[in-house]
Structure formats: C-alpha cells, structure tokens
Length: 398
Image (tube, rainbow, N blue to C red):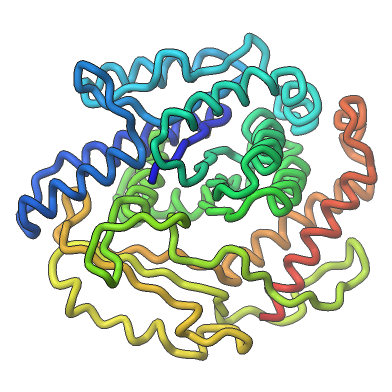
C-alpha cells in the first residue's frame, strides 16, 4: 500500500525532506536483532509505501512539493539529490514567484483557486504511479499563509476527489510567543477547515519539540533543522512497518491503528467568545491510544497499564480504544524504542488558548480587513470559532 505525501509551504517542504531522509536511512541501517529475511521484508515495505523505483536504482519519493516561492523547493530538491540515496521526481513540484505574506485568506482564496488545476494534476499523476494507493500524508504549518491557507484548500479538494482515501494532515502548532502577529487567526481558520475535510490531524507543537532539543538533546543553539529532525524521527518511528497479530508485515488502509472517525458526543456550548475550560484537566482522558514498540525485548514488554479503563472515556472500552504494534526490527540507531500516538485531551489547553487570543483580536476587529479583501468574511471567522469551541467542549467532557 503506497502513500502520496504532499509538502506545502516552507515548513512542509523542509519537514518532508527530513521525513523521507529518516525513512530511507533507517531502512538502510544494519540491524542485528532480526533475521535477514525479516529485514528485507521491512525494507521492501518501506520502499513500496514511500518511494517508487527509478531505472538506475535510485528511489524517488512519492511526493508533491508545493510552495509559492521557489527558494525552499530548490534547496529541498538539491539536498535530496545530493544525498545520493534518494531524490524527488523531476516534475513533482509546483512553485510561483510570489508568497502569501502570512495571510491565510491569500493562500486559500487566491493561490488555491488560481493554481488548483496544476497542483491537483501533479497529485493525480503521483497517485497513478501507485500499484495500490492507500491515502495522502499532507505536511503543513498552520500559522503562516501558504502552508495553512493553500493546505486547507488542497485538503478540501482531495476530500472531494478522493473521498474514500485516507487524508492525514501533519500540522505544526506555532510557538506560543510567535513571530506572526496574525498566527492565531491563521491557526483557527486552518484547524476549522481541516476538521471538516481531513480524516486525521497529527499535531506537533513547536514549543514541545523545542523542549526536547534543549532538555533531552542538550542543543545550545536550536535551529529549525534540529526541530525538523526530531519531528522526522518521531514520524519515521510511527510510519515504518510493524507486525500485525497475523505475523506478517502490514500496512492497513489506515496507517495508524486508531479509528479516526470516532467523534466525542456533542455537548452544550458556552456562549460564543466566553469559552473557558469547564474543569481543570489534571488527568488526560483518551479516545484512543496506539503504542508501537521496536527492537529488543518487544515481545515481553508490559503494556497492561494502557488497558486501564480509567485512561479512556466511559463510552469506549479499552479493547476498542487501545492498540499495540511490535517488531524486533529496531528503528534507526536505537536498540529499542517506543512511540505513542494518542487521540486525547492533550491539545485542549493549547487550542483553547489560540481560540481565546484570536477571539480577543476579532472582538476589536484587528487586522480583519487583511482577510476580507481576499473574500474571507467575518461570518467565516464566526463559523471557525463555533466549530473549534465545540471541539474544545466535546474533548473537555470526555
């Protein structure tokens, strides 16, 4: 089963490069813990999923690169080619000479419709190259203009044209003290649109990854490259092959063992703009958890703690909410590793904060004209607030 990755904007293209690089270097790393046959099956699965083969043996990433400025795409293409291990397709890029100026509305309402045909045609060609197509992995930030606005537009188009294929959006949550004055507007517009058109949102917070670089890796001068490598490592350890219970390497149609279509029951909403967390979230309740174990001693690993009903909402049994995947094939240079993918209350506070900040700006009509001149009306903002406040309320009441 193959996946087509869509890299959008500066952030999406830089992370996309690191993800493909991490996948391939892990695939080539020598592993002492599993048999040669098992290792070969692992490599073949990884390649089929993320790369197509070229005649001279260099794997080509199953990816489409989109940005409204050429600089980052050119850097990304040449870095991949210089690796000598893999590269991007010659005609898999779309770029223009003018960015979106950190304006979501410009990415969504101007660049999107203007370039829709060219971008969708590139994606369609990439899908046609897959023998067995499983879905899309869309990498984007949510605070800028191109990645967020154009990303929401492209995801909507994919939903219309490929309704039965999984669409998973990997979104980068901006720093709390951000560089972009309108990042909270861009974020709520992105999230509310993706909530309607994406099957799964996989979120990484810049602040959390920054902390990993500083505290766990002792990096003194943290660069975006450091942050992107941590992200790529985490994503790679999620996406590489594992065993299913039937003891064969597997890629289900859903690349993660979570039912993304489970929705929290709707709950009563507080008045618009007055959202506050209705209870202190000292305990993180989950809708679903997936643990992926790789390397030494995986068979004897104790995961019973994850089956505790107290971790989950009362309307789901742990047997339906918890999954564990294992393989003795280690990831990267680690003897053993574990990764947790969780659909839980973890993002309630950050989401509540972003909605609150955006609402305060909106109440004083700050910067609204920058959006209305490109066709995003006040009504669109109100729809976004309503939809995200509903999400916060539902997750609070798990």
